[in-house]
Length: 271
View (spheres, rainbow, N blue to C red):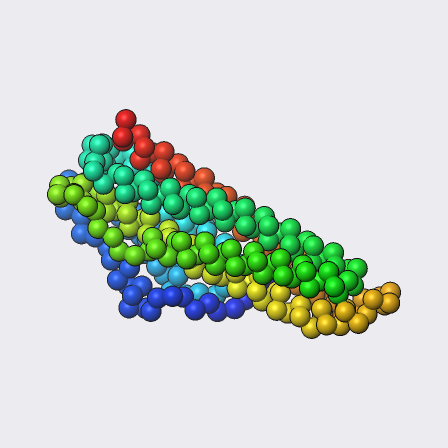
C-alpha cells in the first residue's frame, strides 16, 4: 500500500444521480426468489457504496477492481440459470448487450496497454532522477502526462455506458427483466470503472506534479555527484507509484478477462 498517495476524487455525478443510476429492479419472474439474483443486486449495491466513498488510495482502487470481479463472477452464475438461458436465447436485446460489453472489453484492453505505458514512463522518470538529467526529465514527464490524457479519453468512453438506456423493440416482460439485470451489471461496471480510471489518473498526476520542484533543481545540478534529499524523496514516491501500477495492471487484466467470459456466455445464446 502507498498511503502517501491518498487523495479524494470528485466524481462526475451528484449523490442523487448516483442513487438513480443504481435503481434496483423489481423482478417479477419465476426465478425471483433465486439467491443468485439477490447476489447480483447485492454486488451492484456494493459497487454503489464503494463509488460513493472515494479515497483515491491504492487500497481503494484495488477494492474497486475486486468488487467488479465479484460482480462479474455472480453475473456469470446468473447467466447459467435455466430461466436466464431460456429467456435470452435468441432475445432481441442480445445485440445491445453484446455491443456494450464489446465496448467495455475494447476500453479495458486499451487501458491495460496504457497502464503498461505508464509503468514504462515511471521507470524512465526514475532513471533520469538518478542521473540528475534535468533536460530529459522534462521530456519524460511530458510523456507521462500524455499517458494521463489517454486515461482521461478512455474514461470518457465509459461514461457513455453509465447512462440509463432502454431496449429497442423489446416487448416481452420476462426478457425485459432478465436483460435489464444484465444491463444493470454492465452499467455498474462502467460506473465503477469511471471512478477507477479517474483515481488512477489522479495518482499519476500527483506524482508528476510533485516532481516539478525536483526538475527545476536538477536542471541546475548537472555537476552534482550526490543526490539531494529532495531527489531521494522523489525516487521514493516513484518507487511507491511503481508498486501501485504493478498491482493495478494485474487487477485490470483480470477484469478484462472476466468481461470476455461474460460476452462469450451471451454469444452462446445466439447459436
